[in-house]
Amino acid sequence: MNSTASTGNSAPAAVPAKNQRKLVGRVVSNKMQKTVVVLVERRVKQPTFGKIITRSSKYHAHVASGAFQEGDLVEIAECRPISKTKAWTVTRLVEKSKLVLV
Image (cartoon, rainbow, N blue to C red):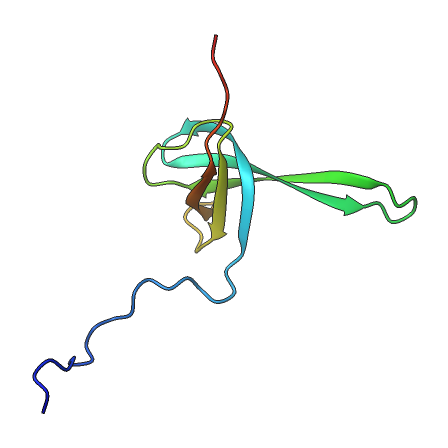
């Protein structure tokens, strides 16, 4: 037998769920502890006239540290319900905000 062979007890690395929904949106509020509000916009075609319109939805997303500021572009992923309104978690920062406070 090979002494360097694994015993098979090692668990696989954290693999994301196969059908996990992921969305990209902008942080519009970070005033809560461990929670940010993310505005996700999508462009759809109006059925009657064919005009392209913007639809938006706000999601409360869990963040372990307060590392995200208003205006940041983040990716959120669906997870188990954490509270009454929070069933998403922030997975990564896509783009830092370019807001300049005067």
